[in-house]
Amino acid sequence: MSSSAARHPTTAGPRAGRPGLEYVRGVVGSMYPGASVTVGRRPRHADARAWALVPRAADPRLLVPTRNRAAAGAVVSGLGGGGARGVAVSLLGRAARSGLLGLLPHLVVAPRPGAPALDTLLEEVLGRPVTLAMGVGRVRALQKPVLRVLGDDGSTLAFAKVGVDATTRALVDHEAAVLRRLGRVELHHLVVPTVLAHEAWEGLSVLVQSPVGGRGTVTPSMVSAAALELSGLDDTVLSPVGAQGPWSDLVDRVRRLPASRPGQVLDRTLSLVAAGAHGTPVPWASWHGDFAPWNMAPADDRLAVWDWEGHAGPVPAGSDLLHHRLQELVVVRGVHPRAAVAELEREADGLLAPWSPADPVLVLALYLVGLALGYLETGDHQTRLSRLEEWLEPSLAGLTAGRRSGGR
Image (cartoon, rainbow, N blue to C red; front, side, top):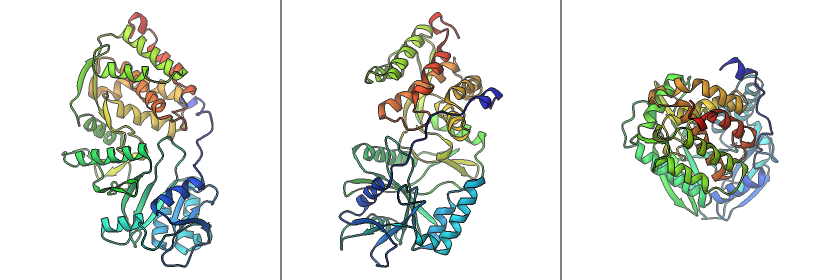
């Protein structure tokens, strides 16, 4: 990262909050139709399910199963982190393994006798008893529960993604289809989860997938090789600015947006690009959709990547690598989006070299248009990058400066 990016103020604005206890109660209630879902002490009744609400009942961030200490310890130890966070996780892990989390308020589920239960479905899929845990992420437009499915020994057996409404069910179904397709492809640099089950169950869509990845360090070469392989999953199309196809589809999506200042910025940006770069060839390919540091881990010398619900295309080839770098700068390092985009402009030639675009900065501009377009289409404004008013207009103006006269 350049010194100019390091000196730029970190991202302004409050971070998105978590959805709170009522959201969690509703999600867990959908997993146990007809059950009573209350907050109280850990029950002793054998048929009841219960999770400690960590760190507190009013704002749970983690649902930890406390009846199985091995599972509880595994859930907490998976949080990781350094500094003060690492100390807190270590103390929490000790509490989990010693049973002290049982003293916290619990979300208690009392199922109806004979009623369906999601953990019963998962036990049938995996052929063994399971224990469930759930993290509660920050509020997102397309929020859905992701369950960690553990064995009695605390090992992670699977992850279960649950679509709870029409939109999230469609995303879960799409991810299942993508993973099945990738399971039939010979991959050299990527490792993807295996679909263990995909079920329509009690109004939900449930995707059970194998855990992938391990400990270690994700290296830049692993990320680059995986991104290049990913972009080749479908044929790369060389289509110029102004032509029918990927370019015209992007323009049409922007013009279908409801009236808004960010939408106007995107429309103006594409008009400037069309005027200044008409006929410039752009390579278009498929992409992961959220090729970010938190969706990957090393798998020996390959890269394990999960969360494929946003896999789509065509987008400008190399968008995955641009996305990874942008998320690394903004989310991991705390760089302001405007400084991060300026850094990406300086790095664009090197990052995009595997795809040999005629104009790397043009590809960067089109990637940012697509990123912002996705936020606007889903109504997402809860993350640092989706708060478009903080960075979009000046960043795109900088990238398109001179386009009107055919610059760059």
